[in-house]
Length: 171
Image (cartoon, rainbow, N blue to C red; front, side, top):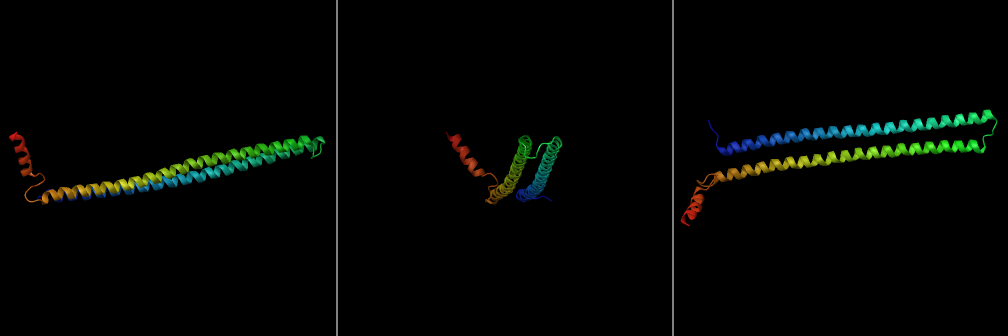
């Protein structure tokens, strides 16, 4: 039992289409997992920034209490210039640390957002590329089948080849 070339070409195109489509589905699943990973990393970064911020605030409170204890033990009043300057410096350093933590968080999140965007764009490009590949195979198969539908010419028009070859021989 044998199949004609057109049937084999159609079967080949169908198998290629199924393979390309399954590869596309695997890529989509991989991209979805990568995006979920990026989202988890983003949440981890936010949690880490919150923990760091809390640590900075706790340290600032501890230093203010120590400064108050030193002032109270030495007999100075809590409105002395030295005490107030130290308290303001503790607040300034804490605010600067919190600002740096926030900048680092925003920078890290921007990189993660960029990776998510790139993954989504590449996923769409892969999707349209796969559909184009399936379409190109279908058109190729259609063209191949049309060459066999012409009357007694087959894939190559031998009469045309003979005519063009004879013209060259006549010169």
